[in-house]
Amino acid sequence: MFLLQCLAIEGPKLDLDITLVFQTGVFLLILLFLNRFILKPYFRASEAREALTTGARQEAQTLQEKTSTAQGDYLKRRQKAYGEAEVLRKEQVSAARTEAAAHLNQTRQMIQQEMLQKQAQLEDNLRASREKSARDVEMVSKTIADKLLA
Image (cartoon, rainbow, N blue to C red; front, side):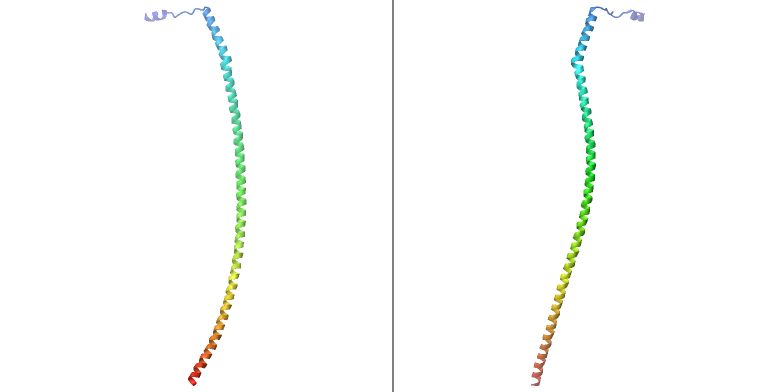
């Protein structure tokens, strides 16, 4: 029976009168006002911002590609410069070694000449000393012989 009573209860009835027309008109006016002064400017600004963002992204991508290209060129030029520098370094080291060897040979020759001159000088001094010693020995032996015989 309770169930029958619950089903028998009717909800409020909707009366269609002038207030419904008035409320619908106010709703449409507010909707037009909001659409014209708030929604359309908001959507235009949103689209403009999206266009700027898209343009900035494309520009960033272009700059990234240019940067990658420039970096690749830089690495190639740097590698080439390192190669050229290495070739120049090897040439200079080779030239320095050749010059050092020539200077060393020149110094050896000068020292060898000096040694030969000093050796000749020593031989001359030795010969002169031997001759003097031989004369001194001869003179001393004559003096001793004279003293022994006298």
